[in-house]
View 1: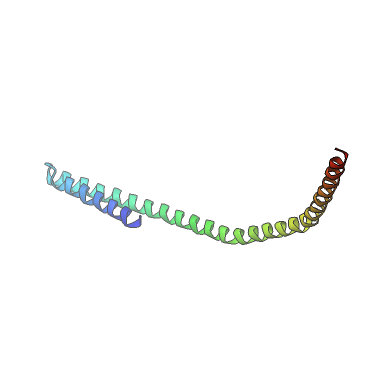
View 2: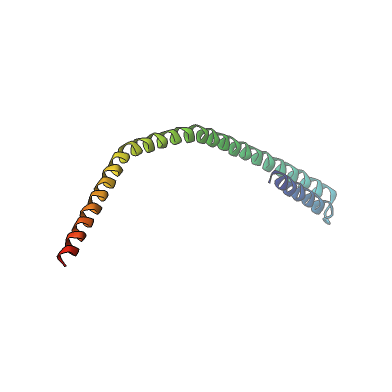
Length: 117
């Protein structure tokens, strides 16, 4: 991406200079326009570089924030998951016991029903 942007600016600069050099104008007018174009291009490049530096700084800040928060969040989620597992395990065991008891009762009820019929 960086090479593409450099190429884009380079191509725009070459195109602009070529257009000015081959334009049918007097030398003084052409020199003035070329000087203005170069100053404008320099200002634009400096502004773009400044914007790029700001973006790089923001990316670095975001990366540091993510690097700091992800481990903390992962640790918190793991702690919550362990607490949930600690609470749910006895409940699951009780539910399994109740299901087993119900299955036994159903089997006994089925057997009684079959004896009656």
